[in-house]
Amino acid sequence: MENKTSPTAKVLKYSFSYLLAVLFIFPILWMLFASLKPSGYHVSQIIEWFLPPYSISNYFSVINQAPILKWMLNSFIVSASVTFIVIIFDSLAAFALSVIDFKHKNIVFILFTIGLMVPTEANVVALFDIVQKLGLINTYPGLILPRIAIPLGIVILKEFFDAIPRDLIDSARIDGCGLFRIYFSIFMPLSKAAIASIGIFTFIQSWNAFLWPFISIMTKEMFTLPVGVPTFTDAYTPDYSIPMTVNMIASLPAIAAFLLFQKQIIQGIKFTGIKG
Amino acid sequence: MKSYNQLSDRYPFLKALPFMLPFALVYGIFLIYPIFRGFWMSLHRWTMIRNMGFVGLDNYLYMIKDPAFWGSLGNTLLFVIISTPTIVIGGLVLALLANQKIKGQLFIKIAFFLPYVLSVAVISSIMVYFFQPHSGLLNGILQSYFGMEETIFWLGETKLAWFVIVFATLWWTVGFNMVLYLAALQDIPESFYEAAEVDGATKLQQLLYITLPSLKPITWVVTLLQIIFSFKIFAQVWLITGGGPGTDTRPIVQYIYEVSFKQNSMGYGAAMAFAFFIILVLVSMAQIYLRKREEG
Image 1 (cartoon, rainbow over the protein chains, first blue to last red):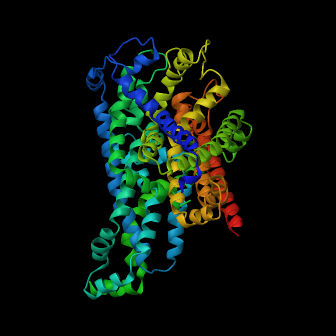
Image 2 (cartoon, each protein chain N blue to C red):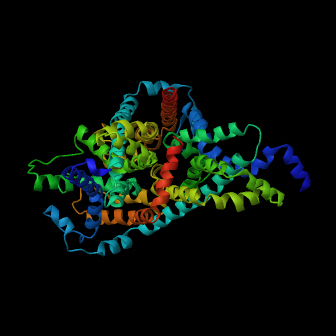
Image 3 (cartoon, each protein chain N blue to C red):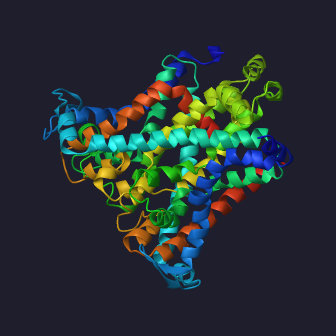
């Protein structure tokens, strides 16, 4: 297949791809190297950013100075709860919509999916009022509940559930299984791959969420990472090592999760494409 | 037990209800109700503490005469118009590059996608320092290796500030579009290319007559998602330029935020949020309509 392309053109095309790839991770590498510079270190030449001396002392001082580990814990509690509840609630609803034949099922499904057209950005003002009246501003449930309301998982899981052979349900019913048993012992195990993708994708989305936490969190103690991190960014300081260390600490879990779960994350994006 | 089963066999909805109820409750309270609540609030003077009384359509009348509303809506539209083609085509180009069967293909794919998994807080912070005039990386590189003499104030001038915002958004999110394009590329049957090869088609002809036409459906999807995503722009602007210089890059979501939560006019904020919601619904419906017509 490649025989038509001349060797020079090939080399050119490949080096362009590699060069672009390196440029893409260059700012991330800079973040890494800047975080390893001793605090207050003066950089006079660009290349010095990337050369020794290296030191990890910034990491200790950031952890000692700021409640960044608490923010990470907050982010984790919120994202893990969102992910867990989304998987349960969405799969239950998708199961009913796929398996049980009730009147006006299509209308219910449409009612659930129109929520995909409603962005948080257009809802924040009223959402703040509602969450405040419920006494949930500045609490974990106040951060978690609005995220669970997004119906993407239902749309995806319903498609998956629709593809599961119906004879499996019939034979399970003959064996005396109730609906919940069928959901739990047949549908959930058969959809493991989809559920894993939805779960990991939901987790990352929630981990990185900015607008709602930014509006609804009032105290430093309750910050999630994306709300806490910018408090370190100050365009007027020439000392980048501390803010870059904060950026690194905030990014490490996401980068690690990405490298471990690449496949599921990419699958999660393809699912998002399905709804378009 | 038995009576329940008999009852629910006749009324299958009762069987479905317990499965749907948990989601339906959260969905109803935190996603659907806010739309109505928001409209209700927009008909009132409303502070963060309480409802100050019914004012009818006054907030909307104020809105259509508010230059800051039109200014920030215009900024958002400008961003949609610049960023949509840039990030859609960017995604296509990266997908074509990452789809080549070459050594290090996995590295290329990971590199293109990696920024997407970072938080907007982190990418914004990196960009602030990257474009910082005096000790930032970009000016440093341009001055040290490309003989640039002056100091460019990237965030001090409207056009440059927009460039920085679009650049940051492209770098951060283009990997998402690339993944969608890559999936579509891998769905094109290998036999198409083999047949073209037999007929003596060049690589360019294959790209123009096989690859690009096959990518048309996914391009609709990517464009739709991108337009909606671009309309919602807030965080990276807030964190990189703060809407500046002046209010030249302030998007509508930021203005809604400032009016509602800084100036404490939630009624007016809700009116603008409702208008913004209607705009987004119209945009989605227009696209669905166009796509249906296209597909005939």
